[in-house]
Amino acid sequence: MKSNQAAAAQIAANGPGFAKARRRLGVRRRRCFGNGQVICQFISTFQSGVALRLPPHSKTWRQFGWFSTLLLFIAGCATYHPQPISPAKTAAAFDARSLDEPGLRAFLESNHVAAPSPGDAWNLKQLTLAAFYYQPTLAEARAQLLAAQAARVTAGERPNPSLTVTPGYDSGIPDNPSPWLVPVSVDWPIETAGKRGYRMAQARHLTEAARWNLVGAVWQVRSGVRAALLNLYAARQTESLLARQETAQSNVVRLLEGQLAAGSVSSYEVTQARIMLDTTRLAWQQAVGQSRQARVQLAAALGVPRRALDGVRLSFADFNRFPRRLTRPEVRRQALLDRADMRSALADYAASQAALQLEIANQYPDLHLGPGYAWNAGSAGDSEWDLGLTLTLPILNQNQGPIAEAEANRKVAGAHFLAVQSQAIGQIDGALAGYQAAIQQVATAAALLKNLRRRLDSIHAQVRAGEMEPLTAASAEVEYDAGAESRLNTMVQAQQALGRLEDAVQSPLTLPPATLDAAQNNTNAK
Image (cartoon, helix red, strand yellow):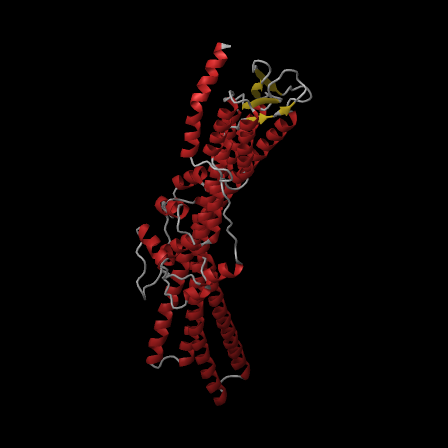
């Protein structure tokens, strides 16, 4: 009895301290956000109900009410902030993009790349960084990585305990000062068998896979920019060559028509020359259309509207070089270890292993500790304490189904990695063989064009000396222009083969790590 009275006195002494803490935290009725408002109202109502109905000498439940309220408010409440998407506004924002955007220029300078001055040409490196700044596919990949990182936080969270209060009222107890019965119990879950560690490991591997998916998306964006710029280069060069070829063919037709009037040639020869002229004109018109389409393709690869390229000069100097550094054996070996798709598939396999470990651990039930306290006034204000222990009995199943699914998923992940690795080996070897053959063809085409140039110069000299007719020179010019077009096609094919090799090996020789990191960590993405 004396111990109970001493405890009551101590609780009464601590009561103002809890009230002061409550005032210091700013706890007020209905001062909570979201779903917590109902909880706060219930706690404040419960406090007032206990204070009114319990005997004046009992401070235990008032102290408990303050402490419960304090815990709830320390936990805090999250609020929802809507972020609606308006298609009209996003389309307007897209149309407003340009290569003169100050943020883009700051992004270029932060990556140690000088932004082109007005009137200067944009090269492949500068255009690639512009795509890293604007391309929405990278923004999507970054968002997926953020979601995976948030999932790691979720995986590491421990289950919250729960509090159960079931007050009762019984007025039929004889000689009982208060009819209230207030049992309180706590359910405190305890995870066993290292489940939390396996869950965190799975989330960590999935985050790693998402990061490598982002790296793969960066390479795809770079590949798209290069391919679009190469197509524009090929279309413009073809347009120029065909225009020159049309001029030479028109000269042939004019000379043949003069000879036809003089009776030196037949109308069949003139008709054949006219057919070749019309064919050349048709090819030139197609090249003009392809040039316009390639410009639109380049804008799409950059993530900007077509008009953003109006008046923008472009440099195609990168397409005059055919480096051999990517053909070295060590580049191939490194590519088979560090390709983004292979690293992502490997991380997925590691995540499937952690998932299997988690399901195996789920065979063992978690523990639930349930300490409780029950108060009823009685004749002496007696109290009861109890300690409960709850666990699931693995009688009907031992988690065999989820374990079998996890094992099957691990096999799927392993087979996927082998498929990705096999595909990568085929792409790398095929790209190497294609590029080496294309380099030889470029050398042969260059030699052919050089000989055509020598013959054309010789014919022009003979025409000036009166030893040959002008028609022979005009025909030689047509052949030379056709050889120049053939050399252009060979160079474009070789550059396409180089692009496939760059995409296959994903070497830092092509895309330095600093540039790759800038694309992944671009917080100013539009």
